[in-house]
Image (cartoon, rainbow, N blue to C red):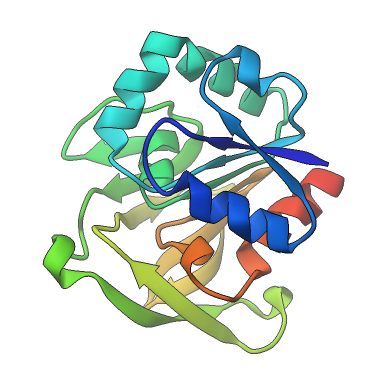
Length: 190
């Protein structure tokens, strides 16, 4: 299996390393052509407005949207969730593929970054929680009927799944817990 990692800006190298620890080939994706031959895609954290601009220049926005609509599995983390959200506050463009509303930087600015417990759904196995690294993270303020919450921070959903999209408002690639990346791989193999 080959998993593409959007490599325009943000923490794409940490995702590639996390996938490598699971024995999966991770390839950087910087152009629409780079999506060819990948079985799944990771949209990493970073700066969502910058990533959107760079995606538009390379034609990646439309290519990603088309592949995800066609069923390509995707893992979005932090800013990647903003890229996919149907509604973004403060208002900005997005791909609108994930039926959630998000508030950008809702857990605070860079200085408020924190590692906090995330309670996980039983389907993700033991232990019942994991560390969540929140860096200028978005907050999910609404989930649509087809969105399944799988992880919570103080009652807020922070890990969700909709069809073949897995979205975490935190940075699972910065921890030793591989369950979020494994969920992407299980989705891709299903």
